[in-house]
Image 1 (cartoon, helix red, strand yellow):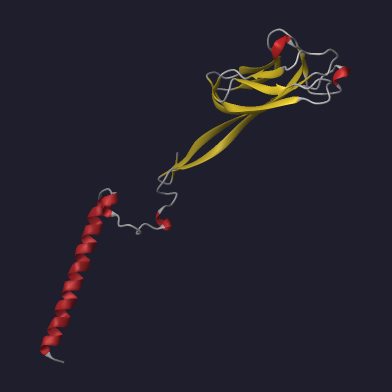
Image 2 (image 1 turned 120 degrees about the vertical axis):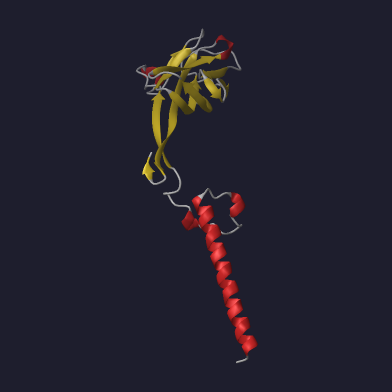
Length: 204
């Protein structure tokens, strides 16, 4: 082997070894401090680097409260979940009792004319859900059918913020045009609670 070739090979080896040492030194200094996006090359972070030991872990739990108008004891209502709604004011249909926090409400109300009499047409059922932050507090059905064979129905949803435990939320119903009839509601309130489990591999 020529001396020039040998020299070039050894020099090349030394240069490469020096470069590796320099990179290792840089890595150590970065690791000792805080790694930022300036030190991260696109595509170099792998899924294995993102472990539960490096991040906080959360889990969610659900609190669910439901309320439905009870089955009527009036035999003329044929076991329907309704209460008689007078022509004046708002009639309570169901009550949710909620603890402090923010809740998501979803429900459906039905309005009937099961009894005798001819209500003035058109008349609409109105369900009121107090305190909604988004969604509509007041919701209307279409024209309520006469004769009691069918109901007019409306669904509603939204969020409500409760400031104290054991707060009653009373959902009410009424008819337009000074009419009376029957109405019922089914509603569910769901509260999502996020619990911190780990941070840096340690219990939160």
